[in-house]
Figure 1 (spheres, helix red, strand yellow):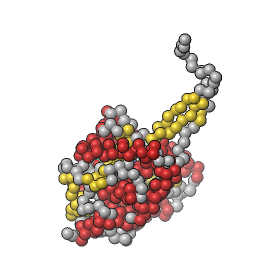
Figure 2 (figure 1 turned 135 degrees about the horizontal axis):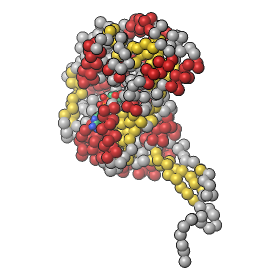
Figure 3 (figure 1 turned 90 degrees about the horizontal axis):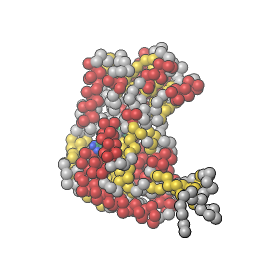
Figure 4 (figure 1 turned 45 degrees about the horizontal axis):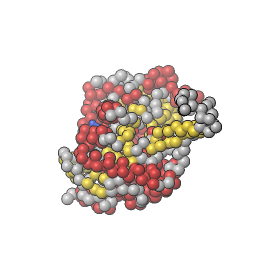
Length: 502
Ligand code: NAD
């Protein structure tokens, strides 16, 4: 056993998880029987553990378990009691924050400091939505007929959630917490590359009082396990977080079964810097926007639009800053950027940079990087237009395409000239311009003199190739419930317009 396999084993033991990923169904660890999947440490490129794809049989078992537990959760407990369980889960997650963060850092390659923040945010998500559990009520609508008309927000039943590898436990909490607060049962399939922390989360939640079977985790592949769960009759909605290509497949499979879907997909967000901005602040923002998480963030500021009068100065500042970022072992406290999370993504990012260079880009990057691991150093691509592949395709790595603009109108036109609509930002001292940009740029989230601020209480989502529907905030509660309209006639003689009695 290598040192890192030892670290892996120690965290697994601390969480009571055995020695490899296993699905969590009905309150128990269950082995799959399909294709073998190997988790690789992206820092050493060495295997950590292997397991078998859950497959269709386990998908059926998980959906059946969720359907059974959901009846009791939504009808057998008061909403206040459900909220209390969620508050208890929030506290329990914090008790296990360290082993979860370490496993996430090891398997996903994300710096431990980022993982700790994400685990704390997951606890916050359960506390936030726990607070909503007994405040989800409908409306009384003054219909003209004189009936008493009111609405009830009902849970959907079982929801199936699919999440990606770039922020596994964060995305898991982001979707599980509103779903159960609204009274649903959940089956969740994290990425086959990073499934363990989601299993840990649900196991911990059960130890804090979540009924067994209410939330089930499938460890496995999308085309087999994922598609089987989408098709299961108990599943009433599919919530997908991932790439546009897979999102299309998931939405088509859901549509074939007449099930609604929420898609949280990728982006190519514009980070826009005007000449009147505080350039030092904007430079810090630009680094956080594209280099944090090694750029593996759906909202990454991957297109940096800078006013032509300050572009050269700004890019020099950015290059200077990026040379000071600490690249290294995700488990090291000092590390600010870890490796790219997996070999497939590493090949994509390096391929995109090479293609940009072949297309004539001036590639500004750092010479020094760790010898092993899927490392891509922070990189600026200059000299490309907005229609270049590097400005239109999601690279999902620490690589920013820098483009200049002449005025507000051109900045808006460039910002909106992509197939995405997820996020964007502006840096300016002019408050009127800031609001004009916020209104004109197509994005579900927009920052003014800031980047990447996000909170569970605020809605999140996109349009076009960035998907549809909303996560977080009260919008997520709407996504996870349906309105029922109830009509009561209190008149002495019913106000029915048609019918006969003898
Ligand atoms: P991906 O699309 O490859 O995989 C996402 C999930 O889909 C995984 O769990 C995978 O197993 C599953 N999957 C794959 N094929 C499937 C199929 N045929 N049927 C059902 N499920 C299937 O994405 P990824 O590479 O894991 O993650 C990176 C992508 O996620 C990027 O595009 C990024 O922008 C996006 N993302 C979006 C958000 C957001 O909220 N908008 C957040 C994080 C990541």
